[in-house]
Amino acid sequence: MTRVSSESRVAPLESGCAAPTDAAPAAHQESRAATTAQSARVAAQEPTLARPSQGRRQTATGPDVAQPAPARAQAQHAANASALAADLTRWEGTTRHMYVDTRGHVTTGIGHLLRDANAAVALPWLHRTTGAPASPAEIRAAFAHVAAQPAGQHARRYERASDLVLPPNVARDMAAARLQHEFLPGIRRLCPGFDGYPQPAQSALVDMAYNLGVGGLARFSKMLNACEGGDFAAASAECHRRTCRDDRNDATRELFLAASHLTNAVQALLREVRP
Image (cartoon, rainbow, N blue to C red; front, side, top):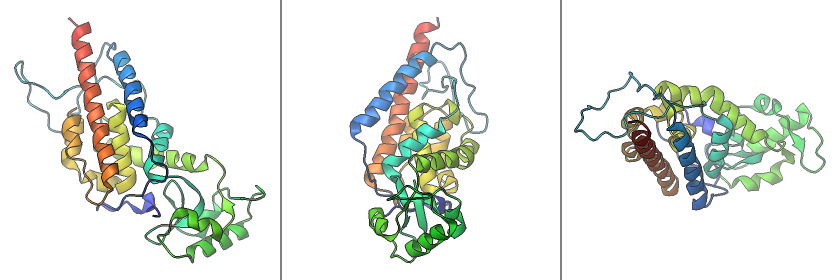
């Protein structure tokens, strides 16, 4: 089934999820969690903790009250847009040619909507067979021919409509640029502590924002409050998207649970290294 362009998902209502083209094995997620766990042990040696956000309600504290990880280890680097874009390909797929999504929009790359022929001309299209650059006239003709095709077919079926393709890695670069300049700033407005979250929680929020738009993500207020309080287990119970595929919802929930386990591990290490 053809994917819905992520740029068309900016309304505050949830939209349908794209069918994965290259679903990663479950071991991929476990490997990422293990790698992040190692990073968490390093973070635990830092002498300071990230200050909890003042913008959201904080959980009551006390010596006899069990806390859901009220503080997170301070981030050493901001979220890596390129790595997060690579994660998106599991669900959004990556397509080098033009296709028509389920809403009738010409799209390419990792859910990158082409609003008109001018948007297509702005990209560095090549002829698939020769590798020669396409002229603006050829790009406009290809855009028109693809736009005339029936919507909602599998993306591969549109390969016959045009021989133009994007150079390798351009799709990922475009997605990383959109994350850097559009989605990540929006997520940080909703979650000021985002860059201090464990990597699995960052990936979960980016996937939801790319799928729903930042406005759609903003509707998950309970989940966002839980994230800002460091309670990623609670966030895992509030991240379900009604119109999303079950396996994608399950993967997002598992990412939040992995973030919860890592946060608890950091807290345990901090208790050991700090008398």
